[in-house]
Length: 220
Image (cartoon, rainbow, N blue to C red; front, side, top):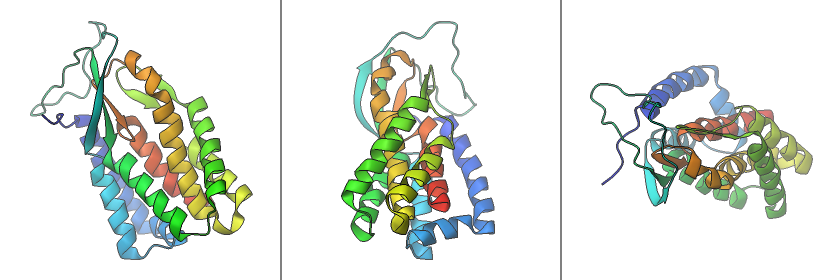
């Protein structure tokens, strides 16, 4: 049985749509995707695939976790939405929009740009360390991190390693670095989060991964 839709994700989707419309009006997204060598149609396909893919989580496995204190109440409960009760088990899933698509696009950029594999690995390693250091587990929610730390780090390391191909390198380093540093390396913290779902690339980190990719490219 697929997990119920998280109302918090719905709210983020509505907020993100509003922000994206504003960004489109001033042309920032066109500039960012243009620096990655994408056509307008390809850019919008990637954009909206990531956005709506953020609502889809692919279940991977479950973990037995610490019980949630009785005093804690479920957040984001609205009429008409099913309540997903926490039963001392956390479902670990892969988010399509914030995990699967950024990884696939990073491999595409690595193959079709002037980024060298060794440079990409160095950039990912650096941003992963930064993301791990600045990320924190938030009980009942997930992993949180200051939103501009990763894109600034990705842009800086990309310019240092390869100024000629800094935009694609910044995207690869930023998105993959956040996924590894703020998600995969934090899997050990899942057991004490007290959350029914831990989504790799979703919930608390989707906005960070998405914005990291865009801002890092703009800064590089």
